[in-house]
Image (cartoon, rainbow, N blue to C red; front, top):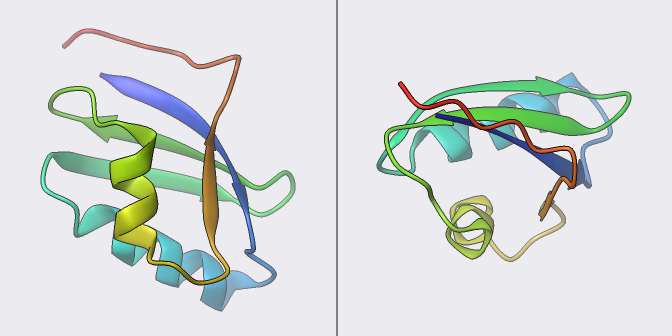
Length: 76
């Protein structure tokens, strides 16, 4: 399944690489595609992962992840 999220705190490609690496390190995340403008992520996961768990994966620093009201879900 895929979910779309809004992000904040990414200001460059290095930030984007850090966020992607952290998201991919979370169990169940199989892929993460990110964009800088606008700051968004499309995350593919084995089963739904709560946004709070993804925020924990990003750490308590400057990167934030939010539910996107236009979220797309696909059942694999």
